[in-house]
Structure formats: C-alpha cells, structure tokens
Image 1 (cartoon, rainbow, N blue to C red):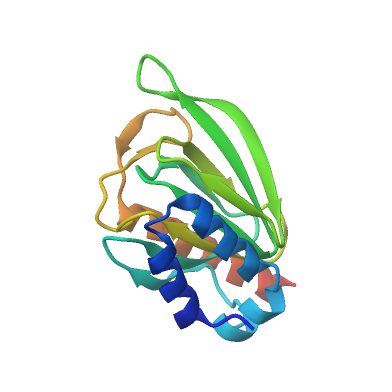
Image 2: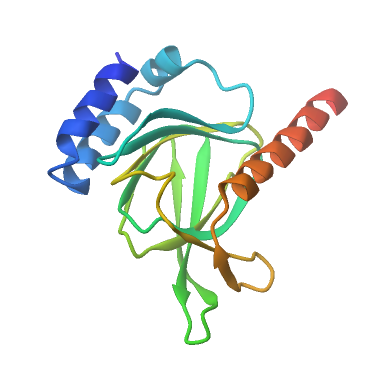
Length: 184
C-alpha cells in the first residue's frame, strides 16, 4: 500500500543516487494505482499538490483536467513522472538557433507507466482523455526555486517560467472541467 510520507522519505534518500533510483520508486508506486488513490484521495479537480519540496528533491501529485495542456517548458533538473490514473501525453521539443523550439518527438504515458526526463529536456504535456489524470512527479531539486524557461504555445518564443501563469492554466482547466460536468 502506498504511503505518501514513506514515499517522500524514500525519495529523499534515493535522490543522492539520482534519477534511476527514483525511477524504481515511482514505478513501484504507480504499479499499484489503487494504493496511490487510497493514500492521496480520488482526484476531484486539476491541480498540483506539493507532497515535499526541499533542496534535495521535490515530490508533487499532479492532477490534469480532461484535455488540459501546458506550454513547452523545461525543469533545469532531472524529473521522473509516473501515471497512476488516466493518461499524459508528452511532446518533446528541441531548441532552435533563434531560441524558439520545434517539435522533436513524443511519448504517451498511460496508467502504471513511468518517464524519466533529463535536466535539458523541454516538453509540453496534455491530458488526452476525458477524465482527470493523476501523476506523481519527482524532481531532482527545489522545483519551486529553480529558474526555468517556458515557450509560448503559439509563437514558440521563450520567456521566464512563471508559477502564477502555470497555476492559472490549471484554474482555467478546472473552470472548463466544472462547466462540462454541469452540462453533462
């Protein structure tokens, strides 16, 4: 059974070993989706639930609204993502000489799947299904204090990452999700 406090402690200890050790922990956690749901609760809205954040590692529970997407961004640190319910599609981007990005590949994650990302990776994320998606994200450092970039979804031009802007995307996705539930 998944225990979020134990998971955080295990991640903190494994962080010194790097993303491979974290990948094993995340894979073991999402191999039991019901256990994760039992511990964290059934998702009701999109959002980012901080389980732990420190200089060694950040652990968050990310809930994606149906059909929600976030712009291309980087983390400037390694990350490991594990889906415990729903789906998460990642588009990978490569930087061009003019600072913009262009699509370079993709990876679809479904329940029980794990994806490690290197510190240089630029990706965007979409929930392609009509239900909330839950994913455990573990980052190799303080996710909230690291200077990162994000790229405009239309022009693909870079600018400094803004947590406020990212949270606004979650709020708008929740608004659309709640409206769709009222109409159903």
